[in-house]
Each structure stands twice: as C-alpha cells, then as structure tokens.
Image (tube, rainbow, N blue to C red; front, side, top):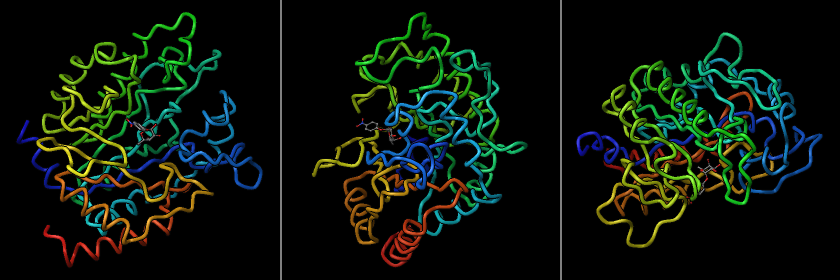
Length: 330
Ligand code: JFZ
C-alpha cells in the first residue's frame, strides 16, 4: 500500500473535472441562461435536484445541448500539464446518473422509459478520449464515480429525509454500480485512481459490498488507489486516502494521506452565473497551505457544454504553473 501511494504523495496537485448534462443548464432551469430561472445554489451539478426535474425532461432538454468538440479532452490534459498538475479525476457519472462512458450494464430508466444513461455522442466514448489524452500527456488517470444516483430505480436516496421507494431493491443498484466501476477499470487501459462520491450517513460500509468491489478493482488495476467516500464520516478504514472538502485544520492531518478538493469558483459543474473566480494568488496560497501540511490539492474545473474550460480558470491555472516553474521543486 505504501508503494501504491508513493506517486500520489509526490503528485501534490491534480485536476478535478466536473462535466455532464448539468453543463448545458449552467445553473439555470430550464436550460439555458436565456430561457431559464436562475438557481443561485453553488453546485450547478445539482440542478436536477434544485429545480426538482424529473425524467425524461432532464435528459431530453439537456442532451441536445451537450455537444463536445472533438479534441476537447486534449485541451484539459494540456492545461493540467501547464498548471503543474500530475493527475486528473473526471466525473464519469455524477449524481444525475448519466455516464460519459458507454455503459454495458443492463438498465431501464424510471417510469418504464427504457434507455441508455450514456451521454457520449454517437460513435464516441468520452471516457476513452479522456483517458487517452491524459495518459498521452504523461499524467495519472482518475475516475470519479457517484454512488448517489437520482436515476436508477433501485438506488438509495442520498438523504435520510427522503423515503426509500416502494419495491426498491438496493442490491440491484449495487450490482449495477459494481459493473460500472469494473468496466471503468477494464476498458480504458492503465488507470490510477477511483474517486467514489459519496455514501450518505445511513447507508455505509457493508451495504455497498465494498470488500468485494475493492478486491475486484485491485485485481484489475493493482497499482490504483481508491478514496474513502464510501463512508461519509471523512474517516474510513477502506480508503487509500481521505478527502476533506475545501477546508482543513491549521495542524493538517498528521500521519494521514489526504487530498483536499476545491474548485476555481464556487460550483463544481459549469455555471453561467458563478463568477467568484479564484485569483492566481488565491490558488498559489491554497496550494502552498495544503502541500505544506502534507496534503494534495485536487482543484476543479467545469468545462462548458462543448468541453472547453472557462478562460477565467484556464488563465489562472497557467499562471499557477508559471509560479511552480520558478518556486516549485518538481
Ligand atoms: C460532493 C458532491 O455532492 C458535489 O456535487 C461535488 O461532486 C463534490 C466534489 O462532492 O459533495 C460533497 C461530498 C461530501 C462532502 C461535502 C460535499 N463532505 O463530506 O463534506
């Protein structure tokens, strides 16, 4: 385990990428900015929840607007490199349940609408394009996978305030998400990191059959790391490293491998109205603070519906890379 963790400890700085059908909405519903109501909540990737949108409306209104330009994943990899980052983590599925990969798990949508959760354009697999770009750039390849799933009829609700649906058989969802993660670690070449997010307080540990899953994942990619968010308490014996969000205590977390995630503005997904961009000074200070306490910074960008990273974040990341060229030691 110590050996597996070495690259991660050395890496210090990574790129988080939140991208999916929430990007076309950009914090408005219905999409887009011109026609929709503004949802001021910080996390644009939660728009389906904020606006209480059901299927098939969510998918049918956003899918036509999600139009990745060819080669966009190369831009991400180049930017990560320019910023001095050593690894990237892409949302292969967020809480809305849609996948950026061609899922081969059997599935039927709620309300008996049979369909696919895959949002890659015909003939493309965006996770394959991503993995290729990142590996070609010499960076480590990470996958974010949401345990929460607002789409799958048998998934457990993310909040204890919500009732469990009548007839829900959580075991079916667990099999489905195991198949997804196994596919991610089977079909995309050498992969370095699985970042699961997150198990709510009442559904922890054994309900996810984590031992079975982690054994399988380690068989497929022996060098890969898996984070700790099967457990919501930020303290987890199953994970390789733990993942405090945005803030850490002055003392850091002595003796523990950790990675703090932050985002360039306030939302993780692309947002039209979230303009609270961090400056280069903010990012450098954050990075120095976290790294000096022994942790990693996983810093998020939210590409737009065509797959481009907003200029405000791209510029600051490049400037951070220039600072690292001079003052960094790797
Ligand atoms: C989760 C997601 O809900 C969010 O959309 C985003 O993907 C973020 C990176 O992760 O949000 C969380 C998860 C866990 C905590 C806080 C926000 N936590 O444990 O403090």
